[in-house]
Length: 248
Length: 182
Image 1 (cartoon, rainbow over the protein chains, first blue to last red):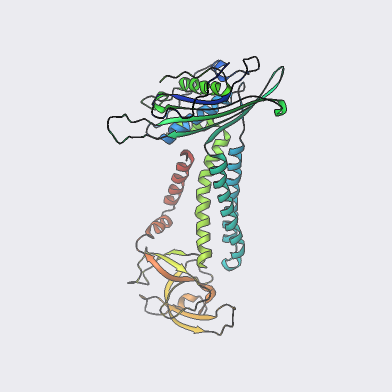
Image 2 (cartoon, rainbow over the protein chains, first blue to last red):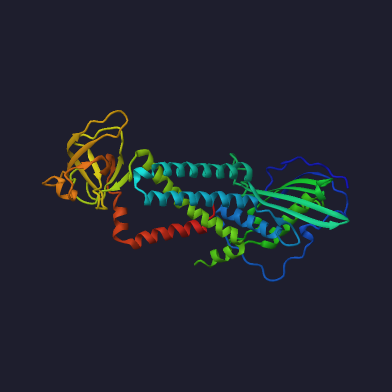
């Protein structure tokens, strides 16, 4: 399956959904495990998500949560919680250090307590600093890290990482060109290999963006089906399968 | 009112609840650490105090916020405004130093001073308030006033007189931290 390498970020000024891909072509199935689009939707009514339309933070959080819920279905990827756990561990440890220091300072008289309070304060600052560095450099924009092992002739391991950010409203200086609404940009990196990473089967990096208005109605209710379909397309594209459809 | 938030919590799982609780806890923790750090830097047990009585009028009125430092290597002089705590009393008192009696101190040993204070608006000096002591020592002094902000202390006074206000404020802050996300 010959595949053209499209330039990354080629379509900046289009307000419709755009995709850019950079990947090693994967051999035609049967080696390719099922992608998210091939799964039937979950039975039962979908829980309605309602957010404040005017807050891009809430919009992005709702989309991130939907991505996590969608991709951690049992037939799909198993979520790796390492980033969350590190943040929780460092954060709660610093809270307990602060609490302990405060309690000690409360019980013991001021002059005597000074050395221990100094130690507690320095420890707290170190922990907070480490947590900030970790969040900024190592975690960055990542929202989902997942892994899946499937068995067909041999054990196939897939690893997927998704990061997202909001592309804010951009206004151009001249009044003639339209203003782009806030968009959700999803970047994906995908690796498929045989057990123990002996041979690389497929590798892909995809990036797609879509305006929030595509998934949220005027009251702020989220169209989960449309969003999941879009995410599924991006993931399948990253997996090296069907090309994403380019339409608004 | 909270149904949306509760549904979100159930949907997003236990880790999410822990993260939101961490938001709240770390706000409290950072406030506590800033307070302790300020205390260490100024060498004072309570570097920010509120004036509760009118005994220092017209310099300070009830409700003023005072900023203190307690430099261990400096002597206090007549005219300095100090905050002190008499052992056995839990409320610190803000009065002016009337007399100092300096002891000899060699090298790096702590400064020895005996102090007598009096409030500007009082008729007599503070001997009555010392609960049996004849003078104050440096270890009773919380700090020396370096600056002040008028009226701000009324928030603390209100919260002490109406504890419900304190709990309401804390509760409101907690709620906000729990449902808001970054």
